[in-house]
Length: 233
Image 1 (cartoon, rainbow, N blue to C red):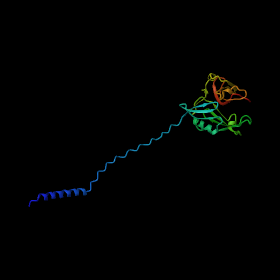
Image 2: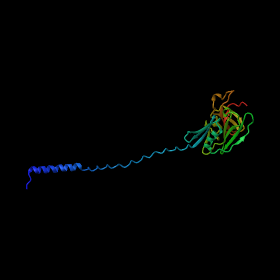
Image 3: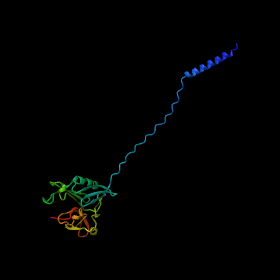
């Protein structure tokens, strides 16, 4: 039997409402999770490089002490005459290697104290006054050095602050116009490199200098420091 148009319209409306209701009740599908990016690679922490140790190349004897330089002329270490023996030996061991066992020279119970003598192989000797009974800085000769070679020791060359080296000539020394000279058992001691130039000719005070010992043949054969500009006894 044919349906009435109003009946058909009602049926269609009911069906549409039912479809809307079903759609509203349905659980929406979850959205796809965004793909996660791979973790960034960790930036390596830079490792601080250790600078290479300075290689001693030149030992310079001055009127006030000893200075040790590397191959590019940078100061490695130094000591002055009143410094403690251990401090001086630390510098010399950087230059020449382990210090030898000392021998003791007994003083004269007057001007000179007892002295420890450290003779490094190759021709360098360090002397340190001991048994002073007063601070080293108050003693007139707390330590000294003697150079008997113009050759390198342990790869280290040795010179004075003025550039003199054992094996040089009298002309090398005289070119510095040394203001003082004294007789020495080995020849003549020409004094150079004064610590206080104004005291070189003082009649009342002395200043430390470096002695270049030149033998009768005109060869610089020994360097001694310190050496007083005036000898009062």
